[in-house]
Length: 597
Image 1 (cartoon, rainbow, N blue to C red):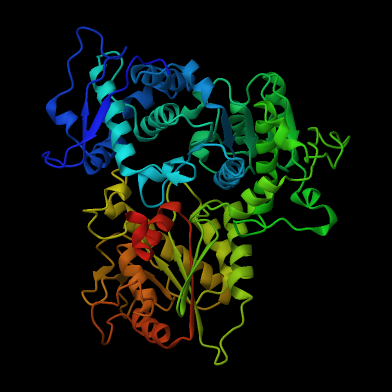
Image 2: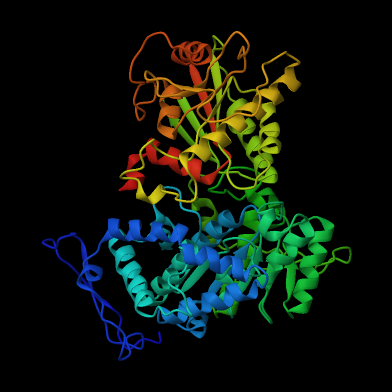
C-alpha cells in the first residue's frame, strides 16, 4: 500500500511501560537525514497512546492554523492531504478501500451501522470509521463490527504518531488535531488489515470535512438533514445541504432520503455540478412487499429511513464491486423515476436474505437503547438536535410511557440531560416537556469528578467550571419552561455563577442551588458535578450496577430529599438519558463496566 515495510511491533512484558514495543521500519517515511525514533517512543503502549492522543485536542499550533485557514476552507483539505502523506500514504492509496461515504445531520451513524452489518452478512471483511466514541476511542475504528483491540490501536497509533513527529518542520507544523489524526490512523488500519470495504462516516459537514480527501468512493449517502453546527456549516438548511453535498464525486452514485424541498434542490444542484448521479430512496414500506415487515436491530420509527438508505447503499456497492451473483433475487419493485420528484426515485427491490439478516442484527449502542436493571430502566439516546430529540421523544413515549403502569401507580420518570457546543438548549428541553418528567437532572459529561483513569473520556477543551455553568443554565431554562407549562410562580434566578449559588453536599455529592428566604426553589431539578453522582441519586441503590449513595439520612436540599424518598419507594423508575452522545457514553461506561475492558 505504498510502503516498502511497515513499522514492526511486539509484546514486551518486561518493558518499562508494558504492552507494545514499536521499532522503526524501513520505508519512504524514513529518508536519510531524519532523526530515528527515540527509545521512549518505541516503548509506549495503550494508556500512553490515549494520553498522547488527548494532547491533540488543544494543540496550540493547530488552533492558530485553524484561524489562518478559516478564510479558505479548502486549505483544511490540503492540510489533511499533507498529514496523510507525512504518515506514509497518498490519497490514491485510499481508492483501494472500496469506501462507502456517508454524511447527514441525523441518522448517518445508524445508516452506517445498518450498511456495515448488511455487507458483513455477505461474508465481507468490513471496516467502519465513526465518531464520536461512547466509552473507548477505539470504538471509532471497527473491523467486522468490533472495535479494534488495544494492541492494534497502540500499534497503529504509534506508527502514525512517530512518522508525523519525524517529518515535522517549521512550514508543515506539528501534528494534526484529534479527529484528523484518528482519520489518518483509520486509513492505515483498514489498508494494512486488508478490509474488503470501509464505511466512513463524515465528521462535520462534508465539503471540508477531513474525510473528504477520499477521491473515489464506491457510493455516497446523505441521511436526514437538519440544523446543527451552525457556526461551521451555516444557519440555514440550504447552507447545510450545500456542505453535505460536498462529498459527491463524478460518476459515483449517491442516495439520499426524503428531505425538505429546498435542501433537496440544493443537493440536486450540487450533484449536477459534480456530475454525480443522485437518487432519492423510497420509504422502507416499498421494500416490504406483501405486508412483511422488516425487523430492525435499531429501535424507533425514524430508523426506517436510515434502513432504506442502507439498503440502497449496500446494493449499489455490491453491484459496482461485481457481486451481481449475490443479487439475483433483488428484483426491482418500483419505477426509477417519479415525475413530481426533483431527484429521480431509486427502485425498491426484494431485499436478499443477507440484507434482511443485516437489518435485523444491526447494533449501534447509545441510540434508542433500553437497559432494564430491575426496577430501574434506562432509556438511552444520544439525540442532540431538535429533529433528533423529536424522534427520541416519539421513541421514548412508545417504548416507556405506553408500558403498563404499576398497580399502585408509583412510577417515577427522570430526565438526565446535558448539551454541549452551540446548540439551542431551550429548544431541546422544550421538546422534552410532553414526557412529563417528575425530576430533571443535569450534569456535565464527566463520568467522575476526577477523570484519572478515564483518559478515553477526557476533554481538555471544556473545564469543569464551564461545564457546570452550562448545567446551571440548563436547570434555569427547565425551571422557566415548567413555569410556562404549569403556570406556577416558580423562582427564576438572576444569571447563575458557579460558586455563588452552589453548595456541595458531602452526603450525596450533589452541587445544588441553595434556597433562601428570598429564593424559594420549587422546581424539581438538580445539578450534579458528574455522571456518577447523578446516577447514584437517581438509582438510590436499586440498580445493582450503580452504587448506593454514600450515606442515608436527611438531605439538606428539599428536592433531593423528597425525590430520594420517592425513588426509593417507587415500583418503577424510568430514566431518559439524552442531549449528548458524550453524556450517553459516560452513562454506559458506568452502567456496563465491561465496555471499558
